Length: 574
Image (cartoon, rainbow, N blue to C red; front, side, top):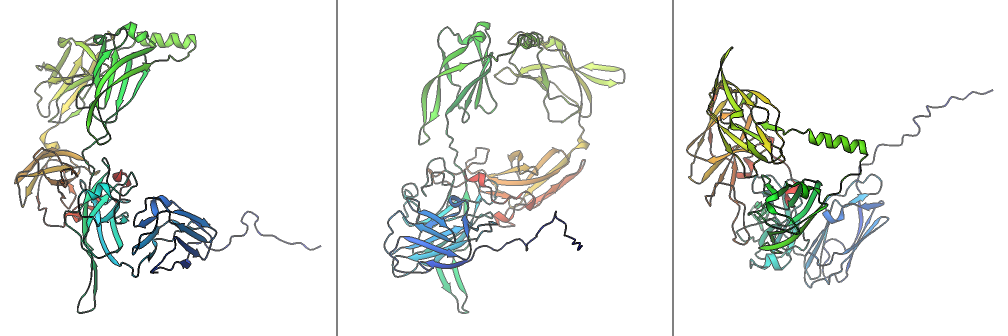
């Protein structure tokens, strides 16, 4: 008998290394650089089976087409058929980006590009540059950048761009096969996909005309460009305003949601037997949500509440118009078992009003005390809210306290008082001190608190050199978020900084409104220019730091510290 041993069955045949090689083009019809082409198709053959990936994001055709060409992939071939008539004496370019991949491993053939002309020559001029988000100087990817041969400003909104490209993750763009002449340069968040600017789309433009050139110096070096174009990308301060929906998930309140903040409070008119004094209206901090609290028990029991609401919304070109809608808010009680329903009713009857406060063991010196509720407050018993300061282990003294409404929704109140640095306090809210609009009151709440001392903070002095009166200084955290925004002086002092890492940003407040202002296409106004201090600042407690901020020391886009710089952000193009 012959015994044969076999290999480990769990392993099996392994094959060779993973394929990482993209497809290779073996034939083009027409060939790249063909002139006097009269056909309507572009056919490319490859050395292996292929697939197409994310064509809508990758495929770029110049000049832009009104009707998208038909693109087919069969086996080892890609065929593109133009639907628009081809223009006479025009250079066409087809850039597949990374859309062409091999069939099995999806290895992309990056930046595959073919150009041909319907006339006797190929236009060969090129320009290059970068596009950055105007507010934070981050590069933005996936943005259409194009040249417009029509030099009238109106062409940006009425005619497709003449030659186009798209930014990569570094915000870089290159526009190719350009005819000799002068052009306008634009960036466009082309949501409408028509290669023209529409209200609401993000945009950028160059104030100067662009004239592509190719020059050769005495040493034979060839210059193609311009190669250092710069665009500042922004979204206009225009917001589509509309009423979104009404929700009544609880019987006693209706939540109205809007697409953006309301400049003025909508006007309500009751329908049926409603009385507006029976409804308490609360606005959110961002003014994009209204909560209608139903105070009357008969209203709460109604299946459907109907109201007329008059408010402002934007039309198709972002003009505000006054309109009236009928709001219908229906409540459908959940179908609960009798025992569960009885338990919920007992829970609701026993509910106490929850009171919150910003009082905490470590209070910042600049904090102002307040209390707040999750339900509108009907009244407070001011004598039942007290603050006392610890003198020693057995002695306390009461601190004078003045209570003042903090917001129009009656959801919070300031506790105005004088607090000493380093002192210990106790905030006491007696039981039944605060009552909400449904007659519910709070449980007793006692909150110990201590105010920080000067020694627990850092101080930063920023010397602006050169200094200009229109400068404003922003203190940023490590997420590039603004913590403070204040007018800059020649030596700006930032006090009471919690020990941490910070960054600085400066902008020119050209219109003097005390905030960074975006651009406007209608007014042909660029966004206010922004500059970063080029280093991270690590501040320690009980230390005073001093830095000199010279915004001219580095090129604008190179000044942003690498720790908070982000590569192309697709969200910014929306």
